[in-house]
Length: 418
Ligand code: UD1
Image 1 (cartoon, rainbow, N blue to C red):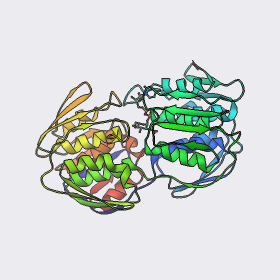
Image 2: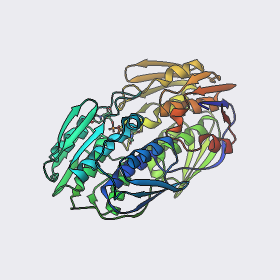
Image 3: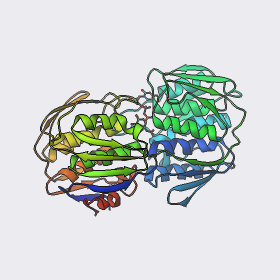
Image 4: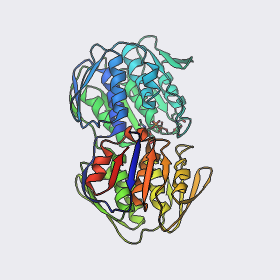
């Protein structure tokens, strides 16, 4: 069942509920091991990346179980400082987010390096710089990062050369248990960083300024808090539905989201001649004729998100005129272009820039997903295309989208698994 088939050409219409955010859930699950008390996480998406993270936490001695479809109960008291198994870690890059909390709670850590991935090299130098700034000694040894702290970590002033999401999160988690104050300068401002900070404060941490580029953390001796916490909605899942609605000439209302998190995408869709109406926790996308070509540059939040770039490329492939896309975050994120070309797209790649010459229509073809968001882009392309599209490697799509075929089916798409 690793192939998704789509009979394209049907405008999406109706209402769809957005699930909890993958990236926030992964960071918050790592942060739970900083506490010893029972934690109930709500609005957690049942997707394979989250399942792998839950398995990793369980392998370390904590108990994490699904209470119902979107709620996970974690009892971290028995968590031990054991190596997370490589066969799990290699499936999930975000397992590198265990380094900060494990180091802070146990004074030492050995976390298998997840390695590169299809969208680029993804180094960890900024994570290391930050944790070293807090007093940790870090070394690389046969595929593992080994970290140790002689005594408690110490608060420090840390400047990030780039506002890395993962580095900000790792340093923020470690600093919660450091002695004194930590200031992260040029911190990432993504909503998932803010969600992690809010969760940390729920369990007793003292984090201020998340969402700005200066985050202050006053270390506390221990995080003894537990309780319930609800994860923010997934802005990338929401964005994928928005683009799919616009690209198919449809009209879709998205429920359970935070419209301000989608602003960078909403603004670009409006430039492309799409109506986007925002209410408190819903957003309606209504396509207008004709769509217009646009230029996009991916940037750290609140710039245009790299995780939406491929889906927009798919849409723009069938918008007559020239669109330009500049990818500033991950060096290898244009691989979907070759698959879109199999569907009739005309795209030229020059380093970090893609020039999309929109054609009048894409046609269905056999294509393969090479990473999560390229898979999402091929779904958008398949929904727009005439005829049947077969997407293999659907396992990438399952990493980040809960019930995607059912949700799209309820909006009128003809989509199924084989
Ligand atoms: C997170 C998201 C991912 C999203 C990305 C950018 C998770 C689980 N994943 O990934 O979906 O696409 O943010 O919004 O939250 N870099 C360094 N050195 C470092 C760390 C990063 O050079 O130590 C570079 C990376 O190579 C990349 C850029 O910084 O070019 C951004 O990476 P980062 O923000 O760290 O992304 P992730 O946290 O890996």
